Image (cartoon, rainbow, N blue to C red; front, side):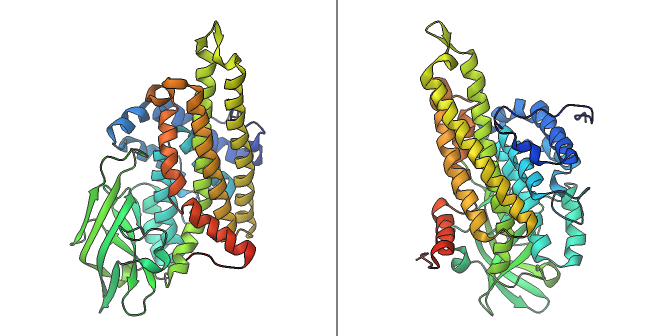
Amino acid sequence: MSIATATTPFTTLSSDFFGYEDSLTDREKQSVLEIRDYLEREVKPIVDDYWARAEFPTQVIQPLADLKIFANPWKETQEFENSAVFRGWVALELARIDASIATFVGVQNGLAMGSISVAGDQAQRDEWLPKMATAQVIGAFGLTEPLSGSDSAQGLRTTATRDGDEWVLNGSKRWIGNATFSDITIIWAKDTADGQVKGFIVDATDPGYSATKIEDKQSLRIVQNADIVLTDVRVPESRRLQNSNSFRDTAKVLRLTRAEVAWAAVGNAMGAYEAALKYTGERVQFGKTISSHQLVQDLLVRSLGNITSSLGLVTKVSQMLDAGTQKDEHAALAKTVATVRMRESVGWCREALGGNGIVLQHGVARHMADAEAIYSYEGTREMNTLIVGRAITGKAAFV
């Protein structure tokens, strides 16, 4: 696979108006450039077709693994010491091209591998993470249920019952990304003995496990979301995440990944903005390109302002993660603000294209549709607002 070389100059994106990419080290910039080069050449030309067909381009998985994207945060697999800001830029670059591919990577690298790294023991990390980093094993993350989403901390209905050296899992999960083709799924279930949430590595071949694709989505259509049913699925104790003892451990995984969802939101907005900037510079009305019109420039500038301010927010929250000072409320605020601004921006970009903004070929419609899913998953705006509200007032208002 041909990738950018060390001599290729690093050019700041037109959507990075203040040059936040300068916060990356030279080595991180080179890695971002290699990822950007691959995505622009090999992924961008095909995603509209796959999005329209609601299919996943499995041929991109191995090249992404070769670019070390799945090995980013984990000491067992990473090629070099990298910052949380770098990991954020990877999420941004992916979403700038396609939010579905970014979501696939977020599930594999963040939620599935993250669960094993955060809640597993060293033996489990050594067994699974290298295989997942090289795409030998594809993972999914099963937390959300048909009747439990925002209330997962207390409302999980999937159960785990200890039976000797095994656990018996029963229940169902919904909206589980990657699950139609994943090799393993991290299933979070409530222990019937103590009522605490625990994590389990469930193999797709385990008897009693089934995953059915959710059809007719109008957002993140490339992502293969599934309904999962678990009927007396037996999992050995060796596949229980040994350091998962309550929902607090689940929340540790979500804290690590929530900020990267905020980065992906910025990337999705950047993709829409870049497409709108290109289109308006080419589309002629009233004898001149529409980028020459005041009202179109206003839409572009408002979009760029949202992107720029969000970049400052996500850069800082990732720097706080590197410094060990990031708390739940910091990641929650980043996710809330970045997704709200993304939603505004993609709408303005669509508006700048007029009627052509709703067809795939002009590069904005897909980003606009995908924004709706990013806005809601990994904590809705309302739930993240309550996390921040509790932090600033000292009062919980969840119910």
